[in-house]
Image 1 (spheres, helix red, strand yellow):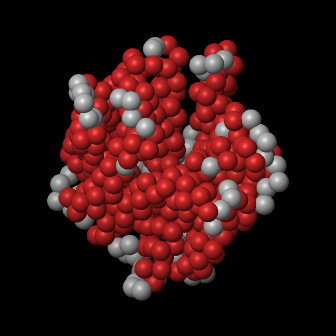
Image 2: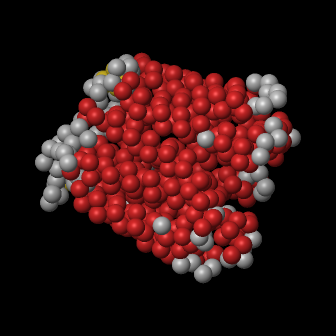
Image 3: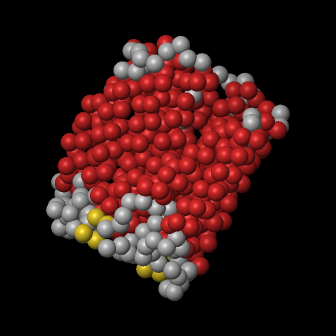
Length: 479
């Protein structure tokens, strides 16, 4: 593992370190866990990550069945997905702060337990409001699992193997994303929709048992600010709902986005003087971390815009079936799975700025070819090649970018780094979705799809350019 990442110079601002109070079973070896305990800890982290990602992918495909059985309108049934996403984005950063205060392992295991219990409530739901409330609880559990799982990897693996652990995490998430729709369809073919949630119970219980092997890093002495948590929740709720309503109801959407901006200003002013702020302002002062966050937002914006545009392109413009569209898009996550471990090995020999820039440029090229290549006759081969190229590029970008983001933060702020990574991802996904909504509202379907793919390619290219900004200088990574 390279012992340095790219930052401006030694005089750059560095994150303030918080006071530490050791837990009863703090990790005896600061450079990772010994074997075989490390394997059990990794099983808990990856198992929890797969659980929350797989559940999200499976729930999407079940919406028509759920709406029919619960006698709900399709527009109301969408709240099954929206409620989950809102809860996640509203509480990612607070969950990171709570993890730093009360212990990563304790809060992570609590998130797994809450997610598992909420899955049982989902399976037992007799009505749509009950199901939506249970999905909110699932989102709260997921908000604890996502950032703290990444933080716990840093204390589980030796530093020299950290890139490999991040790659395995990316591979597991990509595999769960790819398998989710297929597994959901198979379960629905043999059982009712409640089993899509009930199946989480045995998996969650196994993960909870494995959580006993997780490390217990020192806790922070920070105080939890309830008002800041409320402002953060209002900020992201207003942002997501404002983006969602901007096209259909411009005045409502604009008012919500304005409210989000006001909450942001108030939150920043409240958190600015703190050594460990809820929004990681201390980490964003670090050049390398800030560049990684911006690049992540750009590439996830491109990913979401492309994932929305491609099905319309393949089905409406190329005249293919929904099944064929799904098959033609499958090479994307498979390519991400292939690229993740390869990029981890390359990160030991090549500066991460170059890897991220090359990966996102490859990602942009794949999307641009999808938008511009003239397709005639059988389009299956070129589309599969282009989506594979995009997936390879995204895989080569994501692992070193996440590695750089995590290693740019002091170890005691690993939870905040994980929260920032999750927030950047969700912000990018929201912006990509908004961009496609605007394209469909303002343009013809044909032009909207091609402009959407073009915008996605430009967003990925912006991620490549931003990543190169890390190559300005080198400094030692935070311990």
